[in-house]
Length: 82
View (tube, helix red, strand yellow):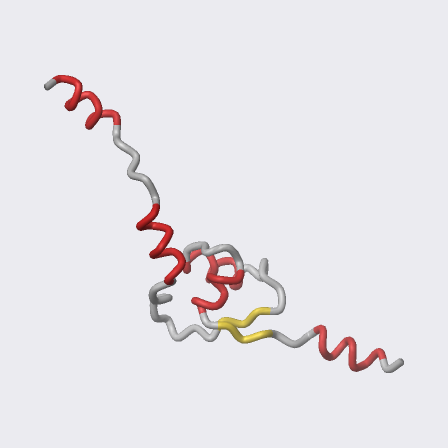
């Protein structure tokens, strides 16, 4: 077995866009992902980052539309007063 090839492949990094990384690691915010990569807490990933925003994640947008609105205390007090 040639161990040199295994060591070489272990050093390779996968280039991902910020949106691809967002989808792979649990739909977290783009600033948090950039920090994780900068701090080397994500191993084997190199961002294809041109400094632009992530764009739209269709799943995140869908989930936002399905989420129930949570009323604030003040809104509940005002409705009870009328």
